[in-house]
Image (cartoon, rainbow, N blue to C red; front, side, top):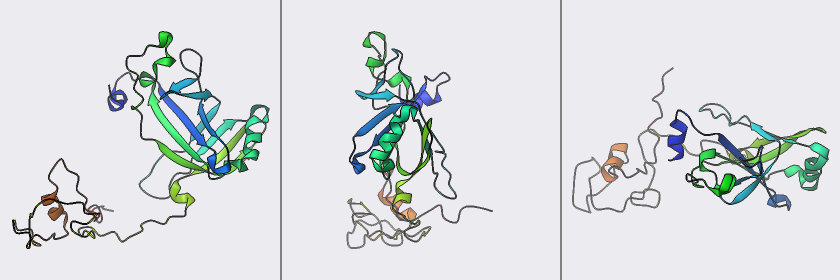
Length: 232
C-alpha cells in the first residue's frame, strides 16, 4: 500500500511526526526526535535511524496561496535545563536546519513491532519532507524552549516574483537547457506542422509547447498560464 492509499483509507494507521535538527552550522551534531514511543515502548525507528523520545511539538505549518509564508513554531521540553544549555552552547540553534518528516505507523521499520515483524514496512512511504530553519529563540522558561522557524526564502531574503509573470509567452530558448526539447522538427512559428528542421520554430505559446511534449511527458513551458484567470 502506498502512502496516498493510506491517507485515503477509512481507517488509516497513526500519523507519525519526526523531527531532525541539524546543528552542524553551529558546530554541533544532528538530533533526531519524536514525541512518543513505538509499540515496544522504545524509540521510533524510521529508515534504520532511531528517533529519541522527547516532548516536542511544532505548529503553524498551514500553507496559503496568498500572503506571507507561514512561520511555524517549535516547542520542546526544557526539563532540568538540558535543552536550554544545549541551545546556549550552539548559539540558540540560529540558522540550523529542521526537517519535518511525516509517515504512518503502517510503514515503520519492523524493529518497532513485536518479534521484529512488519510486512508493510517501507521507509520510502512518507509525505514530502518539509525543510525549515531556526530563525530565533522566541521563549525560554524552566519548562520549555520555543523557536520561531522560517523557510529558506525568508532566511536569504528572497523576493518573489524574481521575473515577470507572462501568461502565454515562454522566455526559454528553443531547444536550450531550460526548454529541454531535443526531438525532431514539429511545427513552424505559427503552429503549422513541418518536417523541415529549417522551418522548425517554436511560437513560444503553450499550444506550441504541447505539440512538442505529448502526454505523459511534462511540458517545460516557461510562461504562467494561470495569470489573469482569477475573478474578483
